Amino acid sequence: MTEPAFDVVVHATFEAGFKVGGIGAVLDGLLQAPAYCRAVRRTILVGPMDTTNATEMARLTEPRNRLEIIFSSWHQIDGAPAELSAGLRIVESVFRVNLLYGRRSFAEPAAGEEGACEHEVLLVDARLADLEETNSFKSALWQHYRIESDRYEWNHEFDLVIKGARPALAALNLLVEEKEGARCLLAHEWMGIPLAFCAQTLAPGSWRLVFYAHEMATARALIEDHSGHDTRFYNVLQQARAAGLTLDQVFGDRSDFFKHALITRASRFDNILAVGQWVEQELNFLGGNIAAANIDLVYNGVGAHEISLEERTVSSAKLRQYCSNLLGYLPDYVFTHVTRMVISKGLWRDIRVLEHLDRLLDREGKRAVLFMLTSTEPAGRAAEDVRRWEMAYGWPVVHHVENGDLMGHEEPLYRGIEAHNARSRAIKIVLVNQFGWSRDRCGVKMPAEMQFDDIRRGTDLEFGQSIYEPFGISQVEPLGSGALSVVSNVCGCIPFVQEAARQAGLAHFPNLLQADYTTLTGWMRVDSAWEALGIDHQVRDRLESANSRSVARAIFATLPVTDKQVRALLKRGQRVSRRMSWDVVAQDYLLPALARAA
Image 1: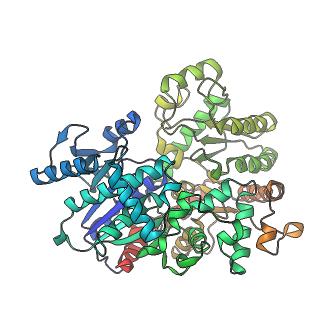
Image 2: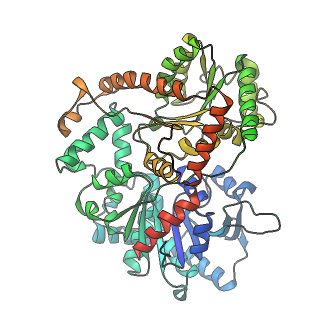
């Protein structure tokens, strides 16, 4: 492995202060990986802060976030050295912002240790930033990158990161001295690009810049916003690339989308990282200079925690008991889908597969349950509301509307679940629309000793048939516990799992099952990008209907029947998961990619 040429690495991200979603999961994994911590002397996370958001400010200071605030004028805390404190206050005054500087731990300290995997954090509240300074930066964005900031000022997120870029760089210059050597700034997704461009224009050559593509935002929008979803988009992509066409040539000008306007300038970075091969292809599809830029694959990792068959059995028993408490039967199999409640997760596809699998299991006298743990509310419902609903009408088996229970996309999903449960014989679906997986969060029918780890350790199968999935950490996490993982063929984790299986000496890895919802045959075939543009929900529905039957048969053929088969799935899953750990990702993918940026 080539050692990186950087003493300081800055991660620019919305999730600098606390974990919110996928990027937070990546940071949690990478920043405590031993290979990363050995190779990078100093790490600073930089991002926005909204002091008017009470929930956000509470999450910053809650104990499980493990953030030690050293300086924050808003919190009235100042434990920084006098020179640094004075400098930060000058930045606040000049730019009219609030700053927070501290240290955040990304791992539980071992016994007798302090500050395991601690990294610095710099947050900027730039809502009321000085207008003249902001406009000066917008002018630079137009002059150097032809970014028309006035087109996107209406968007709160865009406005926040533009306003925060210059004060963030000024504060970074206080924290990082010239003598500290080579520096790298990683822009996580579009929101990190303004800070990177600020550094590039105000301090050219001082930072090596790397764009970290956790997705391709334009592709996500095109997939989610059209009823043909992935079936349409990936057929368009393949046909267009074969014909040498770019995204704008096929889909039209997308410059009205601020994320698109930013990521098309990613060719100005010293290197680009993509979390999966689809993201790499989607970036190349943008054409122009970015198609000629270097893009390194840096997959996401999984927590490679070893568990015994006995530990798996204990977790499985808790899940089966929960099903019995709710539905009155002990299932032979427990299926799960742990995800965000967004259209890209393709939750309706789970129901389609279960319609076919229900008949197969029923013939064998087997029963199963699917726990869908997903919610439109990131912070979840109040525990007292959940207990009241549980007593009143049997939540989470039954849900009501207009009382704070079902919200947004949850309602149509539940209607589909209701219809399935009414006609199914062997498999019932339970929608747990709550954040968390414990009795205090999910009601008294959940076993008292249940923990979140149980839903990852005890499941027999994890669904993840997304219409857009740059990688898919959640889908493959349970592999190490011996579960089957059912993913769509556009899921970015597939090549990494296959490579890990190859390295583990496994010619066949049945733990991972692919659902193909993009390959067109017969009358559905297309011969050009223009034909593929015509793929709509009717074509996709026909393909899903046909192929979900094949997926159900594959699941039925692979589900373990004997203890020997359970042990074999667990052994294979752990062999593969070890080769997908965050330490492997850091050492074999991230660090060499950072070195290339130098």
